[in-house]
Image 1 (cartoon, rainbow, N blue to C red):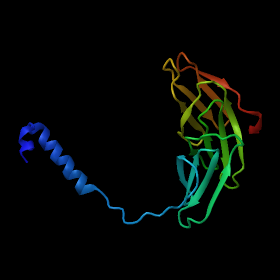
Image 2 (cartoon, helix red, strand yellow):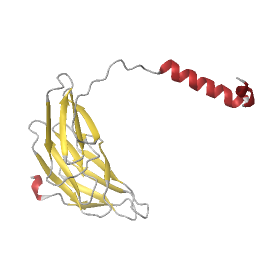
Image 3 (spheres, rainbow, N blue to C red):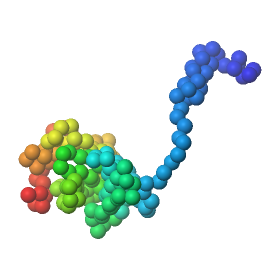
Image 4 (tube, rainbow, N blue to C red):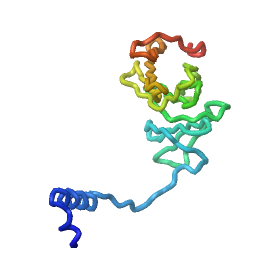
Length: 183
């Protein structure tokens, strides 16, 4: 206890309150159940229809039912072993993007899991690790910055199936065509 007197009072009180908070508000986990046992690194999840939907390594996408964990489904979105770190959803679809270049933007139908590539970014530094719908028709995807510190931002307008990307020297967006497969 002598060490407490060596610390200035300004540091002692916050330390004591922090420890008190940790012990007071910590939760005890009483049981833990594995609901998915597979060789996959899951990097993104979404909750929909009482299921945990996931995307991860080896082009894997799927779900585990929370009420009935034995009810599961997993598909491969590509023959290539792509790695996904994003997952977003709107009313009808899930969307995910792989992190390597070229970056493929996948759209997966929620009802039948049919999927297609709706956009391809061939920029060598494309590394999309964030995707977010701001409303039913607009989403933004963010890529890690390039060597010059410029972040890649992609805007998707679902209403007319158009993509815009920022220019490397600023945030002026340039219209890009989507893939032919998006009809």
